Length: 358
Ligand code: ATP
Picture (cartoon, rainbow, N blue to C red):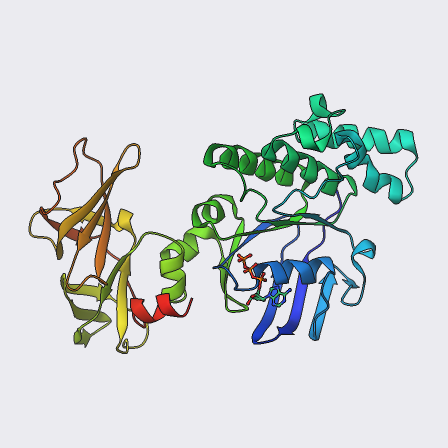
């Protein structure tokens, strides 16, 4: 399958108070996941990419082609929506062969193309079934086969698993990942599910209030979030407000938090207050007389380890860590923790303001 990058060159789109302002290159042959809270503009971005909406400024390019003003049917884009929009009066195979037929393939050729994509999506045995007789997951597989059958250069997936239960979501997202790798298509998947985004993405783009805040490999965003919003939105993290900057000497910073005094290396400028200290759970180690301490308020088994939450100070501060023991600590126990060197980050802002302005 031919692939192209999809480029948003200073694309702007306004709707009432909402402004989307995006400058990004979705790389050819990669799966980019766009993650962001409800209303941040994820679907709007896909609608612009598909040609359902027209930008008020900037250009959209599919490889070399400037498609900014092209209608959806002229673009080489396949779309899978959250609500499996299949033709209800056509059986599965006819749903999939419809696109190739409209684009000029004869019945036999369109049937061969459909068979190929039904096999790829494990739907061959359902070829003659009507959409109404399929489960949600099966319908999404047909929707995927149908969008691939037009041999698009770019595949757009808008929350394709959101109506499915957890186990089915996992199976289907593994299949999508495999199909994307097999076809080498440039794909953009939108979700507000952090675990899904981290698990699937070649490139992860975090979106907020109409803008892409940070884009990169999942691991990089997880460990080095660009701002406090991204740190909190990506998933579990310790968040401790910095009460005082005690010293900055030769690249070493010492700050006071409600859970203890933390010493860490810093590369660039002195942090400003208010700031928040963030540390991922896997970077905290339970020990005697550690740097941080707090009281256990929550324990949750996660298969192989316990997710532990400790309360610190007034309640907006908290420590999230993992414990690999068979038995969790009791609620109310005092735990002491060390921070893996180089893993703590200080980010401007407070947790409260970031949660309020999502
Ligand atoms: P969700 O995760 O809830 O689907 P989203 O990130 O996909 O959200 P969009 O659907 O792109 O967000 O919406 C972006 C903004 O545009 C929101 O403020 C939304 O209220 C607004 N919006 C979306 N569709 C319309 C519409 N048809 N008319 C007016 N405003 C709209």
